[in-house]
Length: 170
Image (cartoon, rainbow, N blue to C red; front, side):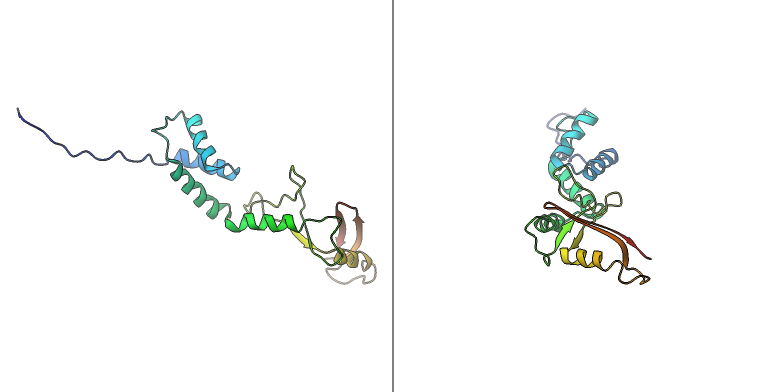
């Protein structure tokens, strides 16, 4: 039996690491576009974790940022691209030669839903001018048989939107 003072080296408590199931949950939520703080709070609710069992917000932010950039192709240019698309949106003041943007789907605010670049939601946006659409619609019948030239175009111009539907000869 020993008597006297006994000293032992104590390690600092280690940070909680992101387990594979937390990473899977983080990927799923990041794909849906949730912010890291909401993902972290969701981890606590879904898995019944206490504050001490949760990874730090910084760890979740790093993981979500890394995953989003590598797999969802989200980067700093994405938000800037969306801003430019919004600036080029079609409106009644657009002249014949100024380009405007359009999309195939619309989101809840009526703006083009261009996607995020993932395989499920590809990044799609179109740019054109009124003049190009008018030329395509007037030349539809003038050059029959030319490969890859539209025929059967229908152009509809309204104060809030322009639509052009063409059948292409491939």
